[in-house]
Length: 195
Image 1 (tube, rainbow, N blue to C red):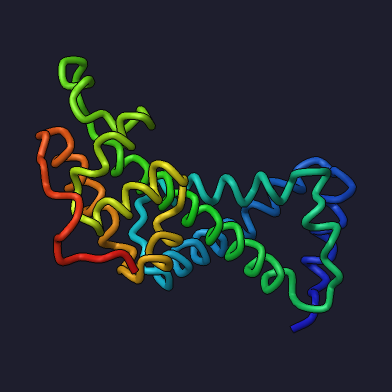
Image 2 (tube, rainbow, N blue to C red):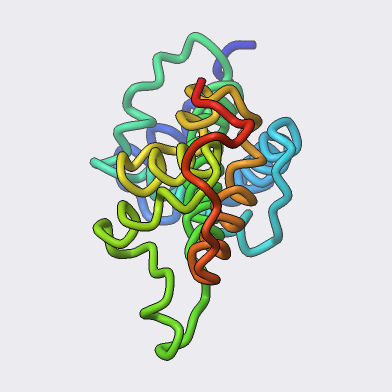
C-alpha cells in the first residue's frame, strides 16, 4: 500500500515544524503504536501493564522526534506510513521488552537483605564469592561463577551450560541461600559434573 496524500501532507508538516503537526501525528498514530506494543509483547509471551505500555509508547515517540525527526526523514515512501511505523514500533518494543527483562532478572538475582545480614553470604564482594564457591554443588558453582565473576547474561549461561534460561534465577537464589546459611556441600565427588 502506497503513501496516502493525507500522510504525505502530515509528514511534510512535521518535518517543516508546522504548529500542531506533531499533535496531529500523535492523534493519528498513537492507537496503532499501542496496538503494536501489545501485539509484540503477546508474541514474545511477555506480560505488560498499562504503565509499561505508556512508557514504551513514550520511548517510541521520543525516538521518532529524535535528531529532528530522523526516523521520519529516513522514510522513502515505498510503503504506507503505517507499515513503516509498525516496523519502527516493533523494533523499539522488542528492544525495550528485552531491556526490561534484563532489569527484572538483575533485580530478582539480588536478595533483599537488611544491614545485619549484609555480612553473611554477600555476593556483592567478588573475593567472598570466590571463597564460598567451593561450598556449592558443581552446577550451582558454575552458574554463580559465570554470572557473578564473568558477568554473563542468563542467555549466555543457558547456552554454555545447556540448561533452560528460566532455571538460572532459581539456581542463583538457591546458591545464595546456601552461602548465607553456610552450607558445606563437598566441592568434588557429587553427581553433577561440568559440561
